[in-house]
Length: 65
Image 1 (tube, rainbow, N blue to C red):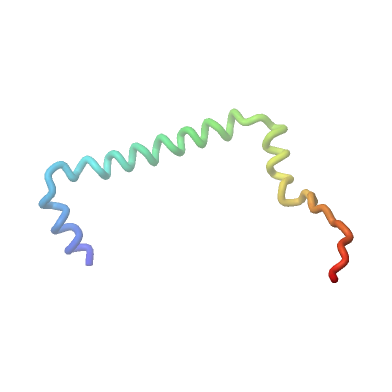
Image 2 (cartoon, rainbow, N blue to C red):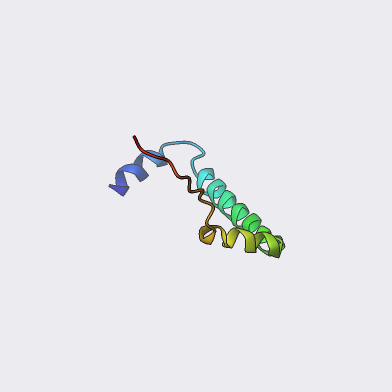
């Protein structure tokens, strides 16, 4: 299966740039994510980490007719 894809891609001019672009996008994304993790405020991290445990449901008494 890979030989069919590779054979078709070898015929396209300038196709070698796409893996480099995707690697660059991947690298930049994780650098930005890494930077955000270390510069995020502790209060925000605590607030977001407790969201699954928070009970915000409002229970109302409704009569079903």
